[in-house]
Image 1 (cartoon, rainbow, N blue to C red):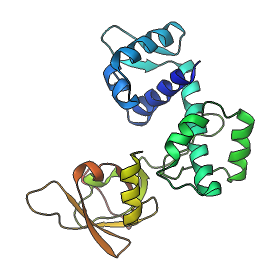
Image 2 (cartoon, one colour):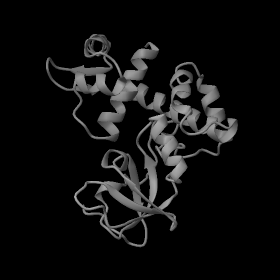
Image 3 (cartoon, rainbow, N blue to C red):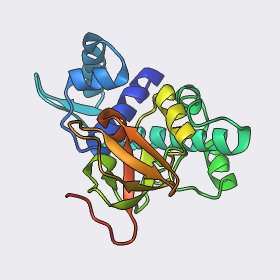
Length: 226
C-alpha cells in the first residue's frame, strides 16, 4: 500500500461513507486533485488487490479491507491536525497539507501517544469526527448545512467541510469556527446569499458556495427547513 493509494482510499472513504455519495473515477479524481486516467489506473490496481470494488463505467466502492485502511488514515490525519494546532501553534488553515504528509509515515505508536496526550478528542480543529483506534466514529450529530437553516434559526457551528486555506483564513477572521453561535438573518433580495450574525455581534453575508461549507447543530430547539 503506497502513500498515493492510502490517500485515494481516504478520499473515497470521505465521499462514500461520510457524504453518502456514489463515487465515480471522475469524482474521485476531482476530489483528489488528480487526472482521471491516473485514478483509473490506481483503482484497477487496488481492485486487483481487494481494497475496492469497481465495475466498468460504474461506481468505485471500498471493500472491508479498503475501509479498514482508509479509516485509520483518516484517524491519523485528524489527530495530527489536532496536535499541530493544539500543541505546536499551527493555525487551522496550515495543517491539512502537513497532515497529508505525516499521516503516511507516523507510526501507530506515535498516533496512540498523541491521542492519549490530547485526551482522546472526538473532533479535529475543523470539527471533523475522529475515529477511535478500532475505526469507530464517535456518536455525533451529522449536522445541518447553513444553507438549509430557516431565517431566524439559531445554531452552533459544528464543522467546516472545506480545507481551502484561503477560505479557512476568511472564516477565522470572521470568528466563524466550530463552537461559534450563529443566527440566520433576512437574506439580501434577489440572491442565494446567506446573511448571518456571529456570536450575537457581527453581521456578515456569505455567498452560497461558502455557506455550504458550514455545518451546524441546532440550539434552543431550532429546526432546519428539512
